[in-house]
Image (cartoon, rainbow, N blue to C red):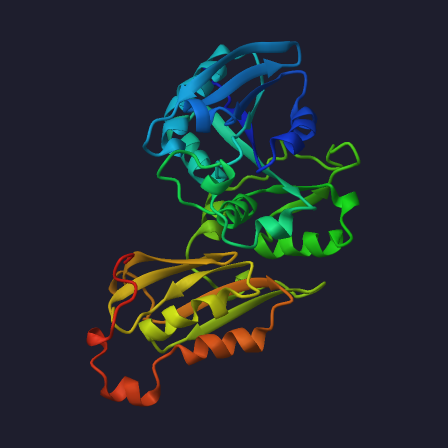
Length: 357
């Protein structure tokens, strides 16, 4: 008996539902079924709306209820059986899933890979607005302030979401490029954030000029590795058009109070940074470093003894008009001095991050 072939799925993410429509059309072929999810009714009614269509027209529609818990988790839980049903019908040879604006690709793909063996994620496509991209990657505005949060507990900011959507994409569609005076610079920025991606501009009507679905480009291991926490030299792309990526590394620990005091200076001019740091008052603990726009966050990753690495600090930062020497000097000034390394009981240092680590 011949094993049934997996149904390829192309995923579309992006903040703008308006810009996604012409991209959706470009992803839809004669034997494609499209599942599009909107969150317009989420703030008022607490539901995500979904509609299913193919080349013949609308097929079905409905709603997913979202309570006060993790909206992304509830979306995934409700979406899996819908996709499973569509794949089981064997009427289409390609599924396109258009995620709601605030959904990140990574958790959604992870759930699909583990829960739906009959589906193969083929391409992850992200739509970026050339007019708003720099603004969306900057600042510290919360999704909730724009009415885009996926539920009450969602405290992500716009910059964080935008960066993560780009970082997981096989294809980035640069929409409204004709309205930007720096389209080439924006393309460089996208490639610095994700060298795995292919950047394709859209025409005046928003239709992408290159392939955006069924490309066969998705590689789960590569996507997970790039979106992971560790920073390394392979993340540093050649600078150009005012876009720079800096790798900072130190074998000395960071003084927690000086790091906390310097946070605003560190993220100034930095669009995105990620890495792992070593805090002096937590000598055994690996600490995740992440920033997007003007917001920085730290989290726990386990113990240094659980890895092959000696304790160290490694951060990769990307910015537009970024001064590498200035950033490195700021970070270096946060390290323990030679005298502090010799004399201080590090564990007794004030801990400004006690509430988050």
